[in-house]
Length: 173
Image (cartoon, rainbow, N blue to C red; front, side, top):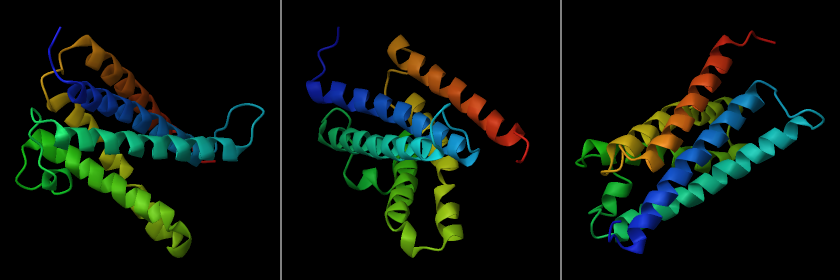
């Protein structure tokens, strides 16, 4: 067992949970776009759960970033959390993902004031944000080879592969 401080465990666990929630939110976004809903429920159920999963993922991302800044072993400066340039690759991809997710959240909060096409174009940036977050997960730190990280990473990979296949191969309705 390691002697890492509690902040280290909090940083790791919130990062993993954030990736899982991002995957769920992504899946529900694709499901909503494809007009899928659970049997005997209305479409807005899928949409609402998508929104709540996205907001919950943002909360976990916020804790993950804050604990990374606070943890002296992580050596992440506050500026590196929002500005990817000059950071190591594994941190920069996480920062780019965070920036894209922030753009989606901000424009979603102001969605009624934006033209739908502009909002949707920005919303599509999650197709880049998720892979960047995924690369950050497997490239950052020293845990990529441990089962407790490999298992959720494999689950997210399988889910995203199935979702993208469904999104791309599903005939237009």
